Structure formats: C-alpha cells, structure tokens
Length: 518
Ligand SMILES: *[C@@H]1O[C@H](CO)[C@@H](O)[C@H](O)[C@H]1NC(C)=O
Ligand SMILES: *[C@@H]1O[C@H](CO)[C@@H](O)[C@H](O)[C@H]1NC(C)=O
Ligand SMILES: *[C@@H]1O[C@H](CO)[C@@H](O)[C@H](O)[C@H]1NC(C)=O
Ligand SMILES: [Zn+2]
Image (cartoon, rainbow, N blue to C red; front, side, top):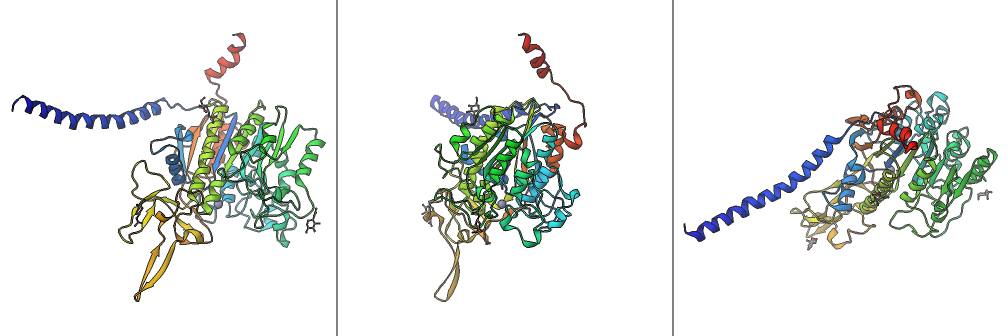
C-alpha cells in the first residue's frame, strides 16, 4: 500500500467508525440526561397543601403520544411528561369493561367504582334508579367536599357544561348523568333533584369557590342562543322557570360572600383580587374548540385563561385548595372522529398544566395529570421519523390505497369509509383514498373499522402523571378509584386527616423562620 492507499484506508475507517460513534453519542447523551434526572428524584413526604387534578377527557396513551409528536416531534417532552412519578389506571367500572365519564369521574373523585352512567353515587345505585340514589349511604363525599371540610378552597374548571359527567361527581349525586336539568328527567324521577340545582342549591356545590365552564341552557330557563353560541337540542334545555345563575347570586348575597358572575374573556380577566366566589358560564352548551373559539375579549376564554384565574382565587386561602381542571373537548372531538381537533385540545390542556406548574410550588402542591378513559385511536405502522402525525403513511400493498398514520377502531358515519363496488360480475370492498383529502384539517375524520353512531370510548389503561407531595403514591398499575384515596392521603383529607404526622422540610423552615429576619 502506498501513502495514498493508507490515507484512503484511514479516511474510510474514520467515516464508518467516527460517524457511528457520533450517532451513538446522540442516543447515549439523551439516555444519560434521563438517567441523571432519574437519580435526582427524591420522595416528597410532605403534606399536599394544594391539589390540582387535570383530567384530559378521553386522553388515552395514544392521544398523549400523538399530542407530543404534534407539539414537537418524537423526542419532545411535554410539561407533564417530565413529572417524576407515573403510573397506570385501570378504568373499568362496576358493571362495564369500558366506562363512561360519569362513573370514571366518580371513581377518581368519589373513591369507589360505580355503574356506567351514574354520578356521585356507589354501585348500589343502578342507572336511572332515582330512589336508590336518594339513599344517604349511597351518596359519595367527593375530594372537593373533603377539601372544603378541611378548610381549604375548592373549585372546578371545564371546557364542558359545568353540569357534565366529569365535574358532576365533585358536587352531585345522580342515578343518571343525563339529569343535568329538569327537562331530561323522567316522570318517575320527580323526587330527585337535577344536577344543575344540586350545583347551586346544595352542599358542596354552593360552597365551591370557583366554577368555570359552559352550560347556560342547563342553568337558565329558556336561554336564547346566538349564531356564535347556539342552543343545542340534544342536551338538557331548562324550562321550569328557574334562573339558577340568579339563585347563585342571591345565595352569595344572603350569606354576605364576595362573589362575581362572568360570561366572557374580558369579564374573566377583570375579576379582581378580593373575589372569593367566582361563577363563570361562557356558553349555552359545551365551550368551543380551541381552534375555533372567538379569541377576543367578548369571546370564550381558553382552558389556560380559566385555570389561571381559578388558581389566583383559590390560592388566597392559607389552608390551601383543591382544583379539578377538565380538558373535555378532547373527548368531544374523538367522539366525532376528528383526531386533529382532539389532539389540539390535548395540547391546549398541556399548556394549562405548564401554567399551573408556574403558578405553584412543587414543595406544597400536588399536581396530577390523568384521564378518565381512552378512545379507540391508533397510531399505525410505519410512518417515517419527522412526518406529520396527521399525514399519510404509504399505500397498502393489498388494496393499493394510501392509509393515514392515525385511525380509529370505532366511528360514526363519517369514519366508515368503505364501499362495495361490483365490476364485471366481481364484487370488491373499496376504501376511500385519504390522499385525495385534507388530512391536516381540524374537520378531517380518520377511518374507523367498525361503524357506530359515533366513535366510542376505549378500554385501555390511562396514564397518571404526578409531581409534588406524595406523588410517589402513583407508581404502578392502580385502580382508578385509588386516585381519590392517594390524594386524600397526600393532602390529609377526610378518612386520612390523621394518617401521619406532617413532615416539614428544611426549605419550609427556612422560609418561615429565617426570611422575616433577612
Ligand atoms: C319557557 O318555555 C316553556 C315552554 O315553552 C314555557 O311553558 C315557560 O313558561 C317558559 N318559561 C319562562 C321562564 O319563560
Ligand atoms: C412558565 O415559565 C417558563 C419559565 O419562566 C416560561 O418560559 C413559560 O412561558 C411559562 N409558561 C406559561 C404557560 O406560563
Ligand atoms: C399516496 O399519497 C402520496 C402522497 O402522500 C401520493 O404521492 C401518492 O400518489 C398516493 N398514492 C395513491 C395510490 O393515491
Ligand atoms: Zn366521552
């Protein structure tokens, strides 16, 4: 070998091994950073003064993965994905393998599994059985109620009607989630009170410090709609002459409480610091999707806007607070088979989580991010790295038609994209070609395998992410109703109020003892 030969040999050797090493280095750095982070994790044995529970409705693990890729690609980590403790929750209900939001929220916030479609009552109450739901023993005391009993403030934020399935179990007890107002209650349920009335007339609803969301047509009789905020004919429409927003005001006035009622973004942002009780109803129906809401001052606030004001008000209580925040439109969009809208809603909730992190102290605030149940969303094989999560993977070698990265197991009419064609006596099943449609649109409906009236919930486990005091209690595969018990323990509420002696960290001693002298 002459000199040239040696040089070429060395160069070739370097190109192969040096580049290999650079490539390995990238992955090793990534893993070492994670390892370093993992080694820093220490259990926080303090008591949770504040608790914030985020519920991404219908936000199963595939939705979380898709949201991460949508926000920043495969290696991106969302705010809650950096939380030190993660577990899984089994979401089956007392009677069904796959739950609805009412029984799953009852598990999360009421502490027991219950029957599909029931809310704030135990499994002795069958769906629609009004008299069984009146049994005192069957009625559950929610985490919001336990927090109030402990002298904390309590509140809820949702993009749904405030009387809907996920917030409902925080304050109401009903044999059916449909009993949001009197108009949808059957004649044999006359002794039972509708969910909206329970919110403003009964305890703990009337003592909640913050209630923000939609649902005016459920609260105020004969509400009128506008093109921007229509009345929905398929959800409860109050007609009994009651104006429950007025009932709310009178109750707070009678009790001499400082309150405010708001109905758009401007009013929400102008809520001043001395308000103790805030009631914000921003829509007749559920609130609008993030991508289509009016973002001006007269429009509907975002989930972040609501979360910010909620924390501001609740934080004033020196005993701390309990807050539930629901990203409900994730589920709504999935039911319509519109994956991009669902994922965009999950991204909006993720931003609210980051805001909650910024506004609180990890030392005394337990933040939980979880879901009530999954949907049947799938991430199909094998799109290239860096491609759009809403894009097309490739042609199927079987029917020579493209397929999308995302699809559903079940779906409504728009998701059932098959037809039968008979040509020359031969019958073939045809699949609609997604490459001829705008799959990046918020309105696009991905294909589903099984036609139903709408996309159904899924039965897979959901993840639970936690940071703050006793976050390590979420560490393996848990029952969904365990969340109530772990939160009550972490915050020393109800049955767990004397479970352990409060640990005071050196940081807290420093802050309270030394700061005044500095
Ligand atoms: C609401 O509408 C119903 C049915 O049309 C009517 O009977 C009732 O009087 C109305 N209530 C109010 C408060 O206007
Ligand atoms: C949270 O704080 C970080 C760091 O200060 C900032 O960059 C980020 O914009 C804040 N996010 C929100 C949602 O407030
Ligand atoms: C599949 O989609 C790609 C673009 O993503 C397009 O170039 C190709 O023509 C499509 N194939 C068929 C058979 O429609
Ligand atoms: Zn749902």
